[in-house]
Length: 161
Image (cartoon, rainbow, N blue to C red; front, side, top):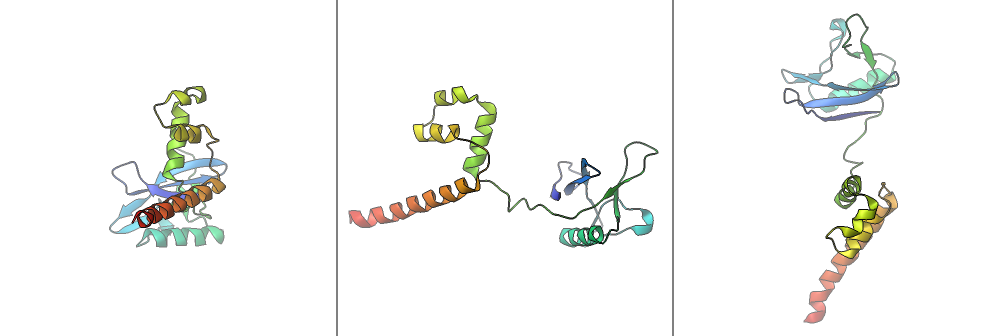
């Protein structure tokens, strides 16, 4: 699996995280004269006009067994690490709800026995105390609850007239 993400280095636009030979690596994608690439062996320099084209080409090369892209070793004398990109991870399809992320963060910072002391409404305290790892059923439940609330809010003005 690999993930293309925003780079934390202001000199680069994007970074790439991937696993190779049992180790997780992070590298920056080069953007030069409107093209994207990773460091390549000079004989096989491969630049793409868009990130999407770069990802598609990298997957194609990885699937057919060609290691076109390499990660330079930080240790002089060691060979470069082959970069095999097969399974892109979409950060958009795996985004958790804001409610879930807030609970996760609160649980990281506050001991479970201190949660009832937080200055929050009781239903929120109850929610924060629940099992906080991602549960797809919870996302469905929260979506249904939100839809019910919106439906009730639409009905209330009609019934009062």
